[in-house]
Length: 342
Image (cartoon, rainbow, N blue to C red):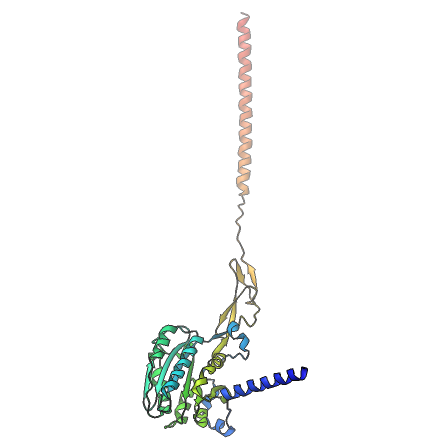
């Protein structure tokens, strides 16, 4: 009984592993290829993604970092209409995983074949429903596969401030995701190196007959993080969760902090705040109650002495007046007595 259960578990695990390997393969490439690529791939030009490798924590601790994100999609003759619909579903699913907005992630789509068409720019849509409607209206261009021209167009026209990209001073990561199923009919190495040198991080997704070496020439390093391959367009949607892991930003406050009161996320870091009625101490972590100034009214001692002196003078005057009245009353009584005896 135990043996049969063990074999069953091992068989299930082997099926799961084979399915994963058939879905997407990551290739690091040969060392000569990596050394030949431009130094700009070091990703110092753009902020590296903050990654999580624990899918169970994706929803609770992950949120997409602000991006200027441009999808570059191949719609050449080799991509059949049904397959192109799968690509559009993949784009829509990706949009659903992102924090889309003016101050969050902005998205553009560049469609290419022999020619290049910018379907919409980074400045065109700032909410998911409008963006997904625009994606649903994209039509394939057919004909050839001018991938290099598409990358160049994306750099010169889609990633510009006029088209909605944030200024370099904002330090918003610029990311391009290229999806193709063929071999480029033009040169991609130099134009990709120029794109990376300008600060664009490139992910290359190959489908079916895609040329792996071309994908590696286009992508940023490390290649194992930036090159993806799927057997068919039918399983490309499975990459959505993989890209969510890659593009998501960890919530620093959720990962642990030492703030006494409130933790506030700030890009890849955080800072501490205090509740009302408290102020942040010099250590920028702990809080202390605000000092309340209480005014204590202290009478002027001179005023007290003056009042006492006045009281004494008044009492003395009253005593003198009382004595005089008593003296006058006595005199009146004596006079009345003398008059009574006359």
